[in-house]
Length: 500
Ligand code: AMP
Image 1: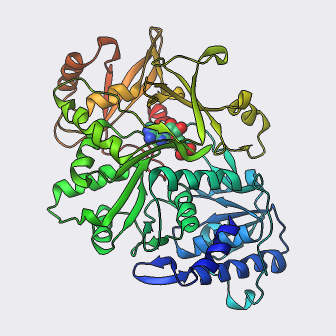
Image 2: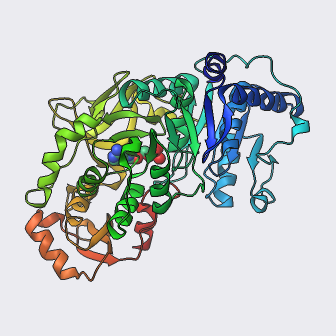
Image 3: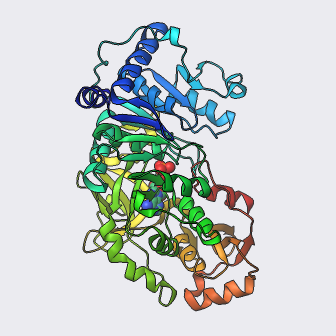
């Protein structure tokens, strides 16, 4: 990772690497310089060594990028932590990763952290007098980033990502999703500890700019202002962020200069057909969907702009006809996707099973968790825990998370399918379907609904009877003002199950 920046700083020293709003913070040369100084600080002043883990508990900021690069120049391993996590969650990740140092500006949190040195992200100048002559050599199979999964299904686990994993991921982006060159800006709206941080790798690799919006907070208003202000921008958004922007645009008559957008990459959770239809109407063919997970970061399949164009007609019909499950695209060419069934069999086209992945993007394992790593990487394939199937043209369809499938009366019900249908009912803004234990049926279907107008249980039940098999119908509806979401905007089905 350090080598890319070092080479680029020689190739185009004056090019913008990092900006906050319109202010240029770093050219490629100055970012390289800063990384050398931070690397020397970690090695010499802090006495840390190659392979040591350095945690980042910070909101999106230019210091985040400086520190990531400094950590890599020093041959150390970055442990990005979402700064919105609770102290006990942070403590868990720090001790699980064995981090030696954590950079944070949250003094109230820092005071509560034990066994780890806390440092401010603004390292004082007098600590940065030395600079590394060159970066510390690392093998491509050495860890670069421990990526903590969002923990929607249990305690977070640290997917150990090597330099090769990140390089392969970044090439996948540049070859498949979009090329990047000078003046192409990556807007960091999603957290750098997760989605957005991964995207900065291809941008630094290919010589684009990282733009931290000013103000930094993602709101639909800020999204509109940012899109209108800068040309040639790309960004990653979670589907729930796209939904918020669409609601805002529908309610406020605001002009949006969509031509400024090169690409909106979305993924990390299901994008419902109804939402995608609206998003395509607003943004045109500037959308690319990605399917990935921390264990194969950003990169399993992608659905290109052209494929969105081909799907549009199918999606437009959703109101009249059945709800199609939309594909999440084709596998990136540097990896293989297979659908596996019981006893590790390989399932034929069209059949649902566990999505498995093999290739250079697949993590080394979970940090410090041998058994979980063996299970996840059994016989050389990453077992994603997602259920899906491939069609005859190689498109992958994700049916659901294995752990979210509801088994009622011995039959599998995929919540995603029920959610897609309920979302078509006018007045249902958001919905999440989970199973509740039941003595007679094993589990029964319960729908949590956020409504934008008065909606009755009877109306929803009648709608379901017309649109889905009887046994898939929710037996109960719970109306809520908001669905519980984690810091990455993912709906927390674990919380919903707890409520039941
Ligand atoms: P994380 O490791 O926290 O990024 O979560 C990864 C999980 O999010 C995957 O295993 C999928 O269950 C889900 N996911 C990611 N991308 C998509 C997508 N495009 N559509 C549906 N689910 C997705």
